[in-house]
Length: 82
Picture 1: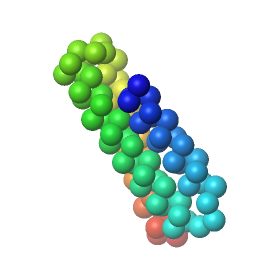
Picture 2: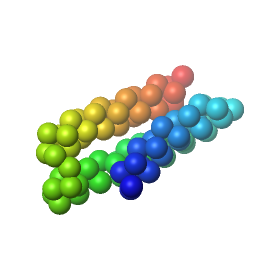
Picture 3: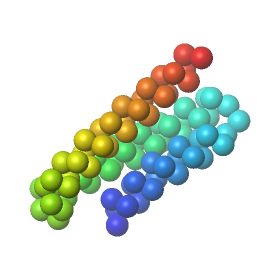
Picture 4: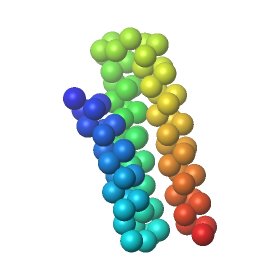
């Protein structure tokens, strides 16, 4: 359930930030989303170590989560440079 909450938090914070009135606020919510993505990554590592999920599934999710972190970071950087 914690994996689900972290994943939902990523999407929810991006959505909430996009509805804000300024890029500064959006950047803030992207930061929260990125933090949730790091939480999700940690939960995936723990799930792998505890063998709660199949390792091929965890590997795919880790790669996707790391790519998501990079995309969020790039978006923050772009908004800051505008």
